[in-house]
Amino acid sequence: MNYSLNFTASILVCSACLLPYQSLQASEISFTPRASVSLTSYKFSQTPRPGALTPSGINGDDFPEVTFDVTFKILGLGGTFFKDGYYLDLSVQKSADEEDSFTLDDPAIPGGTFTETFTGDREDFAITFGKKILDNKGGLYIGYKSGKSEASGDQGQHLSFKEKGLFIGANYGWKVSNSGHFSINFAFADLEGDLTEDVTNALFTSLPTPLDINATSDAQGLSYGLSWSSRLTDKLSYSVSVDSKKYTFDNIKDSNPATITSKEFEEELKSAMISVYFQF
Image (cartoon, rainbow, N blue to C red):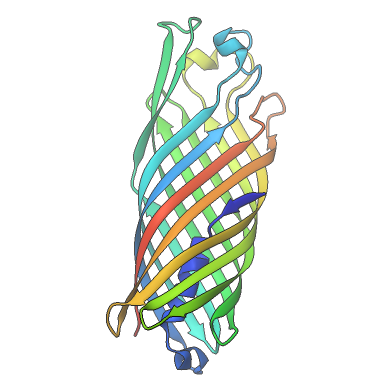
């Protein structure tokens, strides 16, 4: 199993709890836009590729584990529509560029060391449809989400990993005196992952086995999370949430049967986020 926090579900239960009960039951459509900022520790890794460097002798002919490990600064925008206890939410997030270096030390490499600095970013999108239950304290929802992590190296390599899929889940919130609301959520997600990797450095392109990757993979996972929300004014509210995702993608299939791929791709995100909402 892979465990993660579903960002959109946390935001939904926060914004829903902050709306008056009567507005959730009214026949008119209400809309709550929001903006968010977060710091996200992001890690994407590929397990070693046995024999992929044959017959170079580099690293025992195995291409080593590749990891892109950075802390992203992310901005997000979104909004939630409510009508008669139902809600529809849209969410987009975009990070600034960050850098991480890959180093391979081996006597078989000219100069003894190969180092490449990667610069990359992260994008996410989610759409969720749900129904408030249990006197509007809880909710059931389904949705679709996609994410893309992309990085380019100064030695010519380029990596792009995309995941997409459906999720279904539930959330629940508690009012804490007159201070605000505490909420939890959980969901099950079924995702597909696509990795493309272009290898252009002469150290690797001369090998008989192709190192370029154009592979598909999949993962299923249970999601869960926590958040706190409260009002600033009659129109403005805020939430603070923590976000932790970890997906392990297997069943990897490359479009080129001759390519030696990793056995697993792993993606892990841990975030701290502040969101601000506006009620019309």
